[in-house]
Image (tube, rainbow, N blue to C red; front, side):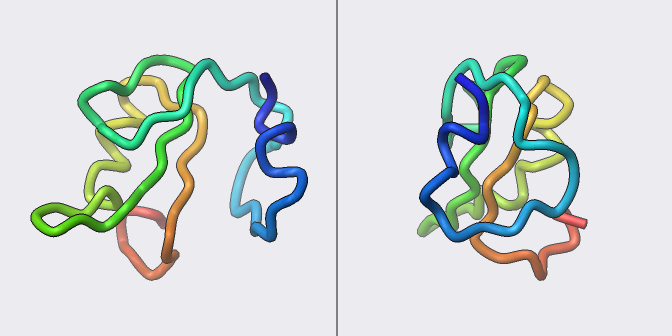
Length: 75
């Protein structure tokens, strides 16, 4: 499935890249990141998913969905 197929009815801002990326799975646990996945960054009670952006990108995530863009890890 392509990223464009997942977001076509959403209000979003594409910061970088293309929506024509092939997505293998959608995850929210950075430990489960694999090449081709999309990572959903969610703040939790103990940790914040935004802090794991560099890790999931290194593991091959092709996109991240952020709740807020004011984090240094997003830039």
